[in-house]
Image 1 (tube, one colour):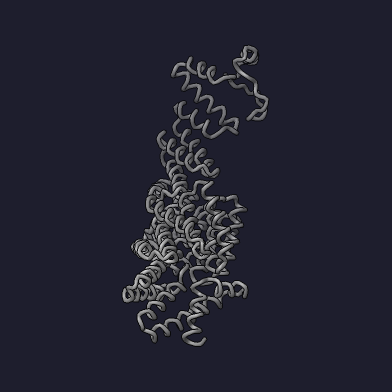
Image 2 (spheres, rainbow, N blue to C red; image 1 turned 135 degrees about the vertical axis):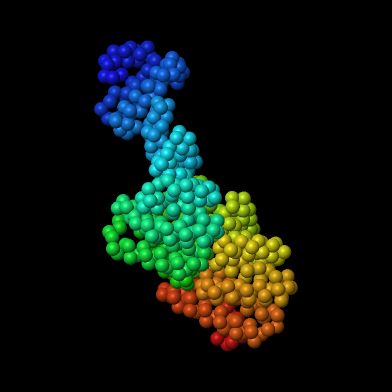
Length: 511
């Protein structure tokens, strides 16, 4: 009102019960009124000319922006209708980021779209795309996440925090889609770019994420190099960002697990989980909890693994994290198979495989089908086991280390079907792939055992004896990395493939 005295008029409107004075104010030091009924508000609004409406929204936006504490969406709509598209875009960016932080992924995407439709340009448009990229990653819309991340990188100032964050989202999505060479290109770009002062910790988050994604697809040397780069940076600069610390621990955990140090991997994942929780990063905390459950399963603690994976599945469902929900279902299916709960395991694995295929989440589909094949072998449904294992093997280029285990499961299914020579060939291929990687994230003992069993079934006893000696030596070398005797005993005793490997070695070799 430009400072005009309106108290008397507002008092009269309140007396007539058209407006109502608010007892709780949103802006300190102000007296606030609201319409008593939406119909009255709409009628009053309808009395404005189009020009007055535009001017009124612009003035309202200006005043609210100066007063502070205004809702970002309200500001965005005032500026949009008031004919100030650049200021509307900035407000939509704030609103989209608030929705992302609050876990409302759909609202984050929609608000960013509104900002872009309103004419957002340059850096603001790039940041809106970055928000969408992150939301799409967690929703499981991975192809869109890659597209939005790439668009963001093109528009945002190079070396800024938002620029590195956009690369992070693209890399996570590319890993799940199995587009491995693209991950390395993005990480080379990120590692070679100097970060602005405020972006240093975000760059470390980006590099640590890249290390994790490269490690889980078998590119251990590249993953280790990035972890070492991040560790050197932590030594050279004072990093206090808890999320960066959490990401480094997660990368270290993945590297330890994939290279055979399971207890260290479990412990580091636990540290990462607590750091994510401390940072208030509920989505990554949920992911770390699922990862911790998988680590417990590899060590033979199937009861603990089930508890953690069920918790992760429940949290992922509540937060609408579609990809994490599917991954947790698949991993839980494998744990339940080991616990003998085969009916539920099959249902979970089938759902995870089907939904992952529909969403195009290749990595999750691969291990879901691999675990489904395992369930089917345990149930004696060998035709289904062969079918699912072959489907998993066909996806191996997208996640090579996981594909090795799928080949071993296929060999077991073929052996059960009486196709011994085919089983030997398949198991030998899996064993050769294992040797090329050196170690696997999971299923290493299964790969070696499947080759032993196939050779024995084919009457090639001398070769089987040599293979079981090699499998035993590799298993004990992994067990020697487990400093805690309790975990070492459980690993050798309670993981079925490990126990059978040692049993066969005793039978055939006397040791």
